[in-house]
Amino acid sequence: MTAYRKGDTFHVNLDMPGVRPDSIDITVEQNVLTVSAEREMPEPDQLVELIAAEAPIGRFTRRVFLGETLDTDHI
Image (tube, rainbow, N blue to C red; front, side, top):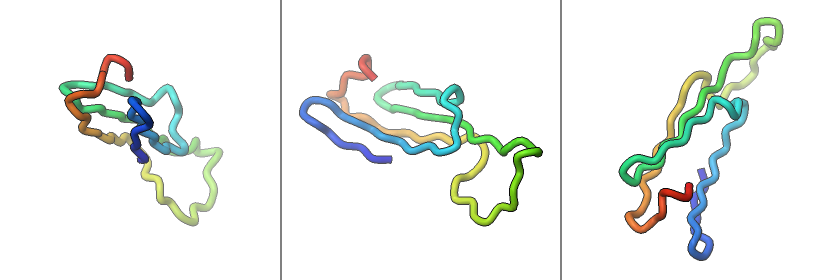
């Protein structure tokens, strides 16, 4: 995750390799931005010999606590 402010805009960039865009869920509740997604195992016919796995398989969630002054209606 990379978070930064540019002028009046606050940016949060999340890298999610191997995640299908339709599995991403973004919510804001009481100034907490929650991003969750799911990374699935490849289909059995697409399996290869795994050498390294730094991106876990399954559902994951990242929460970012937002400042009180941020306009959460424009996320």
